[in-house]
Image 1 (spheres, rainbow, N blue to C red):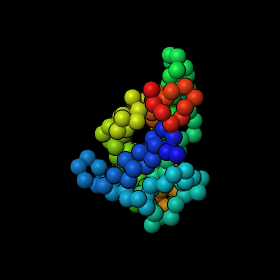
Image 2: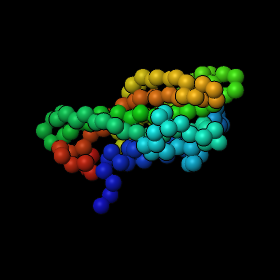
Image 3: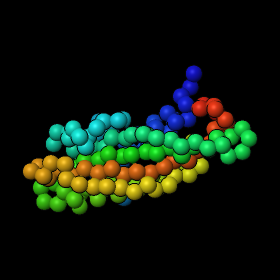
Image 4: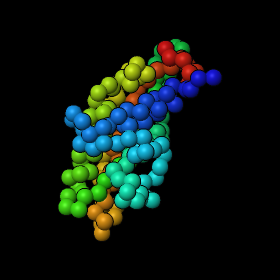
Length: 155
């Protein structure tokens, strides 16, 4: 059986973040070994050699019945990030958040998997003050529709 729409969206977010390559409007080069599903980088900070790093979580989804036979889902994503700098870790954290935001902006419909994406806020703070590592959580919501009680087929 194919993946559920939620899984397809999760995979699309991971893939999009792996596309942050340091060219164009991007500040950082993140490859497949710098973006992880569900890694708790805020409570278990990564090694310096792993930075910058991103982790993706989809902790909650709200579903409502829009019309007969159609469910509208709001899937919440959290992007956890960490970056270091000897002089301005906070500025580097903002640059990495900007890269994530830029990647979301490139296609808010996620290749047709969703009908929109909304911002959800962010938080930033020092993870390791002696090592000057900043961490953040950037939140956004992806809206999509499926047939009622059918996680695989869209409406």
